[in-house]
Amino acid sequence: MPLPGVCMVPTAVPIRVLIADDSPTALRSVCDYLTFAGGFEVVCTASDGLNAVQLASHHRPDLALLDFRMPRLNGLQAARELRRSFPCLRVIIYSEIHGPTLEEECRGHGADCFITKSRLPDDLLFEVRRLFPSFTH
Image (cartoon, rainbow, N blue to C red; front, side, top):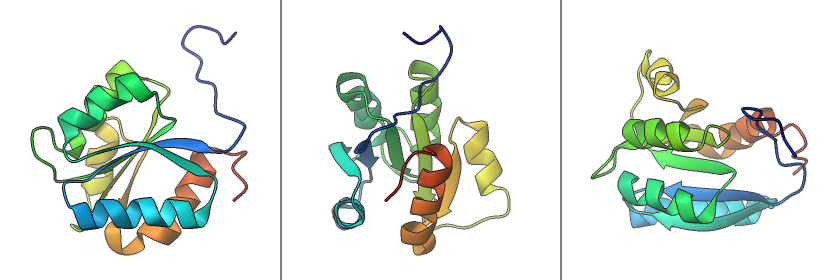
């Protein structure tokens, strides 16, 4: 049994993933990419940040992938709520927008990192390997 306050990193695949994006096309693309990459199980999807927080409570994913811009709760607000409720959950925010302080702002709201959508496939696997050291896919 883990010690209180100590996060256990999953050692077995698949990594259980929640994906939240208000664009059905982007959501499907991320789901398809994770299926293609292997080692992931998409346990739930959401079209807004509030639904993502609610679904995380029920599905208990290992990783949340959140679009930056979403209705009801944006990616920053959802990341803050997820981090508060599930301190061990890994959170990655992604977006089409760029900015020199965007990654810092995302980390300040509880995300582990920020990835631009144009770099999503390559950078996503890099960050997953960083956050889940035993991930071998």
